[in-house]
Image: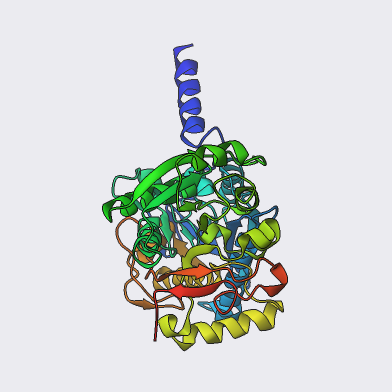
Length: 421
């Protein structure tokens, strides 16, 4: 009986450690010519090397993840093969929420052929999902997660396999606050978040920087994902008489806030500002004319900033998919895929029969060793906690609340800060 109790306790501990989901043990530590303390992936001669994405690809935020997937596909087209092995891309829809992230990561973790993952889209997915993947020995590189806590120096060891090519929102928050304070010369701002790690973290980063610059946060409010009536929150905000409302949230709720703010007494002329979660033609559709004139912070894609390398990439995107980019993290996804390919080339070994072997910890360590890597988004160097980005942030202004006039980074949304020559 005592032995049974011990076994049950151990089983429960394992399940709790991964949020109640079963994750298979990593493969044997020695396989072919490779010994690795976590495990080894074998790719048989003639078989493809499997890379996985976990992105939101359906629903109101689906463009965010589809845009990322598009960037990955261009990277695969360009690379064609790694160490002579073709690249196979598989993926899971992660829903832009914690439940979806958990489910997607668990499915990928059960696939022993997944060499590395690219994701997630939303920080709310990464919090539960990244540890699940790493417990299976799968390193993941996110092109779009921006919540500060994911790469904080005090983060749990459960995130040791997590990196990102996207910026840290401590930077984005400061850029937005500086623009509002020094360019718009406003001193009173209200903030709204939706409880997600991304939105709450970015709203807090903006507020902290704004207050350091002498500004006042008149109200710090929250809505819930799925809310449609924002008038009670907006009415509370109106009583504080802000000059601008900062709401770094996602498409559906952002559209309701933008539209309904024009209906609340005292807010008719208050300026509006969002962030990269609203950098999407679907937001223009959701907000309509209320979006016109609104400001957004997001990665800076101007040729003057990134150089001609982005222009070349953009032509590939438009040729392959027949559309302008659907959001803003496509180039970050391209870079995420390519640093994974480079790391595999660094640690992969073949045997006399032509089979490929990749140590999981060796791959993770090679990713973290990325230094001075020239990508589309800049020169990437990973720090010990997974921040790899060369962050370039801009403030854009929406010139037309009409999705048919979507021309990101050129005329709508149009980059206006910082001024480049």
